Length: 155
Image (cartoon, rainbow, N blue to C red; front, side, top):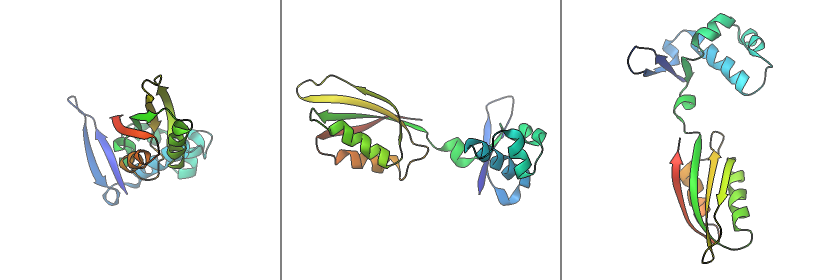
């Protein structure tokens, strides 16, 4: 397991990628508490720290400075622009494909069809997706009546 540790300085923030085998166990335990809270497997911080075996003060001391690499570096939201032919069921098929890949739709904005085509912008959460965004875009391009798919933004 790798952990990112934020080192506070008076200048710009610095991050280190460190293998957990060389770190004290407390850093991994803080990560475990954060995961218990995120997954709602416990009702509050007190229960989480008891379950992991660290004090609340230890958790609060490090919680804002230690996180998994995926927490700090993985993109969480993607906005794509899709040009579709104005045919019944096309947008529904696109949304079904995103749902199959565990994308959580945040916003959908569809323009009025002009010349039998419509532009659709979709923003979705990719924190729980299966596969990667490029594969999803390629799958969307294969849907009948989808003319163009582009990634507009990713954060």
